[in-house]
Length: 279
Ligand code: LIP
Image (cartoon, rainbow, N blue to C red; front, side, top):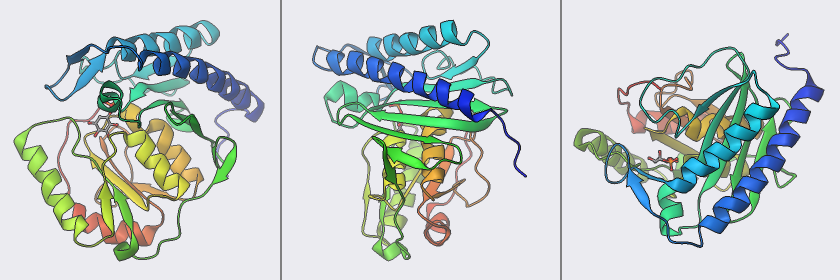
């Protein structure tokens, strides 16, 4: 009997508040996309941040802190100082204010607000809002996955050779790490219909949940890039694991999401593995 981590009516009340808040922050980001965007780089020249990432995060965290003062936060900009995230049993919001910042900066229409809500380190709900396409992907644990209120299910592709895969080169430019990614993609592309790199882990994983991708894998993203989307994929019927097919560790910065265990089993040996510092 799985333990009830939060009473359903309370989870729904918090979920509805979060959806309204995310829509209003989405309006801010959509408006900001129309103006000239100044960027700063973080770990390297390709790892970008803008004042709009910081403002959107402040809007989310300030609002949620005033409504739920005892809740905790793990968020990209407040945690990008490299100090490891404190992931405790308390009610915790895991936030990426703009997932796909490089796309946002270039006006490439694939960036999202990603908000996961966890209690006792277990997901309660996940929301990924595709700002440019006005699509809200969501799931409450045990209640299925949705896009703008419509039920979504992952695909039933049964063989990798008929599959479309999502993966990313990411924003790190460390030579050894990049070569690992190039080699794994070169092995994978030889065995499937194709690979799509659209620059947002959260939206790629929602693509698996919605069935237009059959799997997504990446080494390098952070807990805030997939905390919400991984629950949406699970509720859509997908399997979520580490790159080597082992149990998924949300702080490991490695994820493989597949429409079923057959595709995961065919894909994982081709990907290989890479040691990364935990979040
Ligand atoms: C991005 C992820 C993407 C990864 C990039 C970056 P950001 O998140 O969504 O999957 O390849 O390196 O981490 O920085 O745009 O929030």
